[in-house]
Length: 276
Image (cartoon, rainbow, N blue to C red):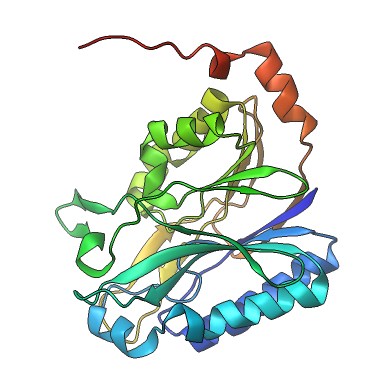
């Protein structure tokens, strides 16, 4: 399957971001991609809850989701919206960090809400409290497509290997990890963690990322690591997008999953144990 990762520098303006996303999507299609993936919070990178409240919408009204569904149908492609920040009807007013898999007819084939919230102090100057604005999901998702079973995840989920083991155990052959990874933790851990998830599970790992300094009308601008990555089931890095925005296109051979799992059948060797 010819696949494309979009590496973006989304701002906190969903209208401007949508225009850029659609242009990059058109470029990916022109290069023959039948499966296109966008990064986390494609529509809005913002740490200002008041700004998010002003510009975000509910899923049924979201213009980014509607446009991406139209583009998927118009081009007959599978499209993973890595995540879209949307409003929920929750009493506490928190948003959802929601991933959408869209089929070639423009229908939503699967949804996934990010489970693990990025509540960390990376440095004395860089603190994140994702759970203040977003409520976590509670359901792991494997989506079935004609070309692969896809295990869905988002960014900070990457640090929880039991999630990926569960996805692979449920049949996932491709693990998607769209991200807006911190430039500090990205430099330290991004490549190692993605390679580990591929090797542990004998699966393709596709990680489209946000990159660079994200301009903001409100609040403090964020900086993300970039390096959208494609990792093969044996652990080889097949593509690294570096830190520039752009489209990374590659051919994903699903036979590589079968071959890796035959060579090291660790998914079949999981053993129950007691303790500690």
